[in-house]
Image (cartoon, rainbow, N blue to C red):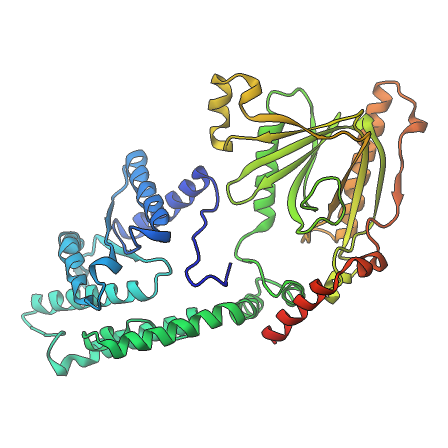
Amino acid sequence: TPYAAKPVPVMFGSQATNHAALKAHFGSLVDHYGNVQVASLVDKSGVEKDIGEAYETGVKSLNETNKSKIAFEWFYFHKECGGMRFENVSILLSTLEPSLKSHGWTTLQNKVATTKQSGILRTNCMDCLDRTNVTQSAIGAWVLQQQLSELGLSIDLHSDPKTKWFNTLWADNGDAISRQYAGTAALKGDFTRTRKRNWTGALSDLSLTLNRYYNNIFGDYFLQACIDFYLGSVGVEVFDEFESNMMTKDHAIDMDKVRQSAIEKCVQIVLEGSDEDLRHGWALSCPHEPDSVRAMPFEECVLLLTNVALYFCRFDWSTEKVGSFEKVDLTDISEIWRGTYVTSTLAPSHMDEEKNVGFAIRYKTNGHAVVRTNTRSMDNEKAIEDTTPPPENKSQPKTAGTKNERLLAFKALPSRRMTQREEVKQTCDEIHKTMMKMREMDHLDLSKAPAVQEKDVISLADAKKATGYIESLGYSLKKLVWA
């Protein structure tokens, strides 16, 4: 949530996904620069601890499996430099000095390189801003002193007032980056400028922190939407998205690829060991509660179509894990219809009947429906399945209901390939065609197969009736604040 003063970090992606990203990142650094020395400044306790441990473990694993040249130093900045003792960053500098000296620097004489730098220092905190700026300025000062010493020159960047230009240059640069990123000057800037820390600087940091908190809640989402639009990453529809949710998603992520990966993961888990033929897979939106058309909030899910059944999969996008899946035999489908699917009337884009389209399926359960709940992470699934009896490995059956019929509803997600209405039509036609082919192969009466009906899942008029006063008031207040 953007409203927490110190948000709890959330780990996204499976261990395999994150390892692949880490490998690609550090592989690129090693290819370009040679040796890499990591200086991680995150806390070793509290909400940052898990991130720091995952980072350290990932680098260690990378070194073991790829024989990489990555040195890792975890410096607890807030503990070592707490109480305004920022000069203690020298402790880290002493630890890093052997690596920095071995990396060296490039020296040119008469346009010819006599020595070449063989490595780099990669510094990070949580947002690579304030702690990183203090540390990098200390490293920059040390390197400049070493380089000048090699030329027979000396410089005092800590106490000589004539060298104030260095601190000012670095502090101005840090403030410029911080304003772009956080909307305020950098924290701890007084130390970067003067190499001294006092209560005036601490109070200034408090004011900047409150300013950042305000910007984060009331300005950053729209600012990010404008940046994404200016860079050409998104079209004008991003402003409809912002008006709808008063937020925008991360457009740096290719959601088509993420969703395709989710479909492949679902196939891997749900159809593993099955002799069924996969015909198609879709990423869709569905109500939070089963057997409903409007249980809020809606969540993304995966629907798989094989030659004999539909599989409705609820997917945990943060851990890349199948939460549960429900099998629907095609011969059990008694009704299928498609049309307008309006779930909210708070914003104009919510009421656009061309963008809010979906379909619903009613099927016979013969008195019960079975939902299988995944109790293991996807990466461990195979190993567990090889050693654990089927009733306790990847899924646990539970009764989903005792009615004779059950309803599943799906809403199309925005896509670059086609409109929501076109996607819903294509999906329903594919399901109906496969259903008819199966009935024909089983010599069942084709006249009893349900046709795809054209009717609203939730009409605009019904959605207006269902939108409550409290819901409308909450949206209006949020919009007033953002405006």
